[in-house]
Each structure stands twice: as structure tokens, then as C-alpha cells.
Length: 465
Image (cartoon, rainbow, N blue to C red; front, side, top):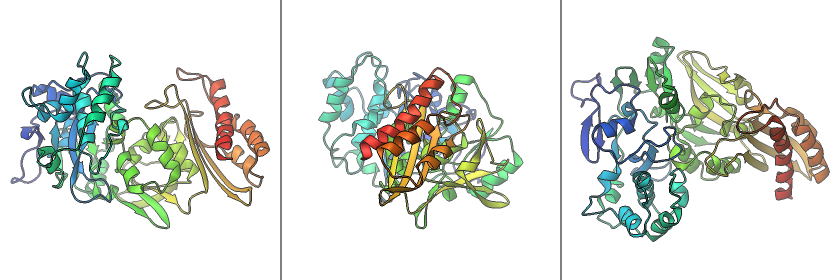
């Protein structure tokens, strides 16, 4: 275990204001287990996959893009994040927010309004609600902030009442004043089996040295593999804080750094990509979006990922970085098989590029068993350019109907050059129902998936006309 410089503190996490050494913490140990090993047992393991929020804690992160140089309290799922990934960072748990004789305002409102029943989920709710309580510029409480927290006693009404009762944080509140200062800088880390490189060049050198290494950012996918399937990696390389992977720019193309979290991308784009604005609320929960990255989502090459269909419709390309330089690959050519891509050993996704100008008509449809915070059975992203009532360009991305995300090429051809009308849509919907090779599984039947493809196009027409 080493930091690399003798005058730099040994790896540690500042927990509730107190530095706690990481010591010989194994690379696969998550933040939740690390905290519970310290006796901080408020945060719980419920699902071990980021769906219930019982494990939520707050981390001091940099302000959102464009919002200044301060910091903000960001809730994350402690069950997914490797403890080593928070080396040098600040974490606050429910125990650190208040004491039995001096409750935090969030804790006090939950207690006063009966928002805690069995109490298992309460510490996670407290941390998610407290992060929203301290959100810069907050006027009303955004209930989506607790969309990733599950109450097993169905006590949502009193929890909502507690959220609605929260006023502004007092000026002298120490957690509020903390936000005026910068978040802790990312530090290079070396712990047995875990490495956080200082820059992209070092990351690529590590991957060349350890081609079997597992690359993690938010760890929202790998963390599930570790927790539920007992997966272990000989080497883990964390790329979530690499500065070269955290840029966002808008010009001839929109370029999004692969290590930006989805919450950061949402804030940085500021609604300038309407198709993606439809994706964000349907993509897991705020807790997950605070950790998940755009590069990680595409890196897993899941056929049911939510972003790929939208980005296919936007004709996105990926910039892949290696020790030999960068290369650009169209997303439509990136997927080669089930969870397989053209990415070579030693390559990282540096950024995603979306060409401009954007299409004039866009939509995103996600069909799932729950309206929010669920895995899709079918996902459809579509972008059309309509000039004088005629479709001059159509791009449609599909998820959940093949071994990879795909373009609906036959449907695009059925739309282009045709009048944008109900008759055209009906013909195209019939074609779209034949796209892909859907299968029967626990989420949906093949027949249902095919029917939903056609219906997605019909529903869009009904809303757009």
C-alpha cells in the first residue's frame, strides 16, 4: 500500500470529520462494509445492487459544471463504491449529521411526522434528503432526490411530509458552509489490487501492464458483480477522476467526457439535447446517476442499457484512447456481440461525440414493469428531421430486442422521403415491429417486445401531431 510520495498521507477516508485509515482494506471492499467495520452501522445493506438506497451516504463532490468552484453534498450508494475509490475524500453518514440530543433538521422532521417505521431504510433516506436539503439554490424539495430510496413499510406519505416541511438551511449550518469550499482533490492511490492513476497516460500504462485489469468509474455495474456474484479482479483501475475524461464542450459537436457522471452530464448540458433530457429521469435513480458515468454505461455494452438507443439516434461516435493515440468509432459500429465491442485491450473510452445541429423531432420511449427506476424491456430513441412536412432524415436506436443495441435501419428507410403523417407512421410501425431478434425472458416475451416497438412509434405520432 502506498501513495507514491513520503510526505503524502497514507490512504484514508475522512468519515464524519475524522480521518479513517484504509489500511489493508481489500480492493473489493465497498464503502458500506468499510463503514460498518468502523462501527457506523446506520447505513444498511438491503439489495446490494443500488436499488433500495438503504446504504446511502453523502460525499463531498465538486459543484456541478457551470455552478462555481465550491462543493456539494452528493448522495451515493455505499454498497457499490469501492472503499479505495474514496481515498482522500469526505464522507458523512447519518450518524455524522446529528446526535440523539441534537437531531439534524431532516432527522427531526422525519421523527416528528412519523417518517420512520421499522427504521431500516431511514438512515439512507436521511442522507439522500440531507443532500437535497443542502442543494445550492434549492427552493422546493425535489422528490426525485429520494427516488432511489425504498421504504419497505410503505411509509412514503410521512416521508414526503417531512421533505415538504424542510425550510432553508441556517446560515451557520456547518454542512452548508462547507459547500463554499472546494471538494477534496482526487489523489493517486495504490492499494493492493487497486490503482487510481493521476492522469490518462498513467491509466493507459497500467492497462498495458495489466491487460486483464477491471476498469471502474462509478462502479454501479461492477459493484453488483462483486456483491451478488462474488466476482473479484486481480487489478482494479479507477478512471472516474481522470481530468482528461471529465471535459464537456459544445461546438461543431457536443463532446462529453466518459468519466462525467450522468448527473454531471445532465447539469452540464442544461437541456440543450432534448432527447437526452427525456432519458435522464428514466435512467435508474438519482443515487445511481450520481455515480454512473456515460463511458461506463457504454463500456458494459449491455443490450438493455438506456443510453445507447438514444445515442444511436443522435448518431454519436466514441473517442477511444490508447497508448498509441486516439481513434473515433461510430456507436453504430461499436457493438459486435453480446457485451462485446470493438474496443481493443488497453483502450479506454475517452469521450462521446454528438454531431450538431440536432434533429428537430426527437423522442425516447422506455417500456418497463415500473415507470421509474427499472430495467427496460424495450427502449427506443428516435430523431427525425422534417422539412415542409416530409421526413428527410430518420435515425432510430433500439435496446432490448437483440444481443446488442441496434439501429432500426428498415424503419428508417420506411420513413425517409415520406410525408410525416399517420399513414406513414402506421406503415413504419409495422416495419418496426419486425426489427431485431427479440427473445422471451423474465422481463417480457418476444411478441410483447415486437408489439411495443411498433406502438412506440404510434405513441410518438399521437403526442407530436
